[in-house]
Length: 263
Image (cartoon, rainbow, N blue to C red; front, side):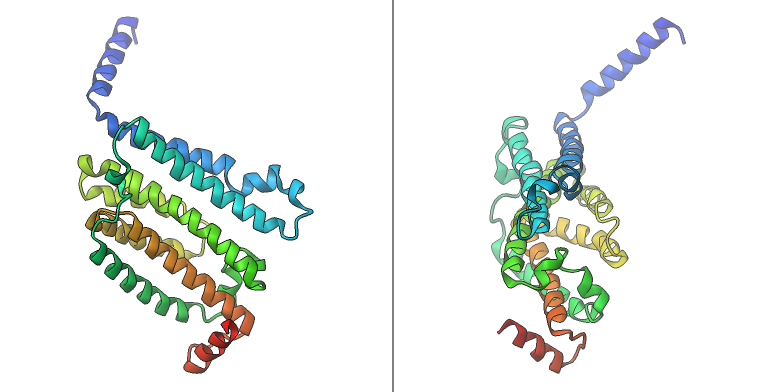
């Protein structure tokens, strides 16, 4: 290829780039950068490889590992996203779902979704293998104090997790792609579930779509947070109770037995 032809190609490419939607470029690049920072610097893997030895004298260093991940991703995925919205895109955070929106519809849909998931979880969790998997922190199954700290950290993490996909990415792409933005944000959401149990990853396809629709319908990310946290809390609580009671039945007797473990 001659120099003049290469110059023409570059000129054409520059002209194409100039015509692109600047906000869409910022959203795609920001999500890529932030997720990369999360993977390499605020992940559990980074903590184990670089910081774990410094916390071995703590009563539960694995709890610190999870809290590092939860808080680190809150800063990376939520705080940095919010700063990009405010100072790069220069718009209000409420335009990206940080507002109450349609409260009635949001709470109604959230409660229905959580209720359905609790019923499904009750039956799916009726195996020791499931209870061994959740909660992710093994020691939280044995201590209610650690359980509560872990779940508080999970809440912080879920706020960031929902905001990056159902807030920053979804609402950021909505004007350009309309309802296709629901499918766009679903793809990385599902990919980041890879490595988890098959049913959870497969379910993330439909969960990601449902949460995206919920966010657009209510114009808020809050109900996605409520829904996702509600589902995770129910999974962790039921699994922890089954583990403590060593009861994996699905009948009324098992329900009473697990309730007694709380009381």
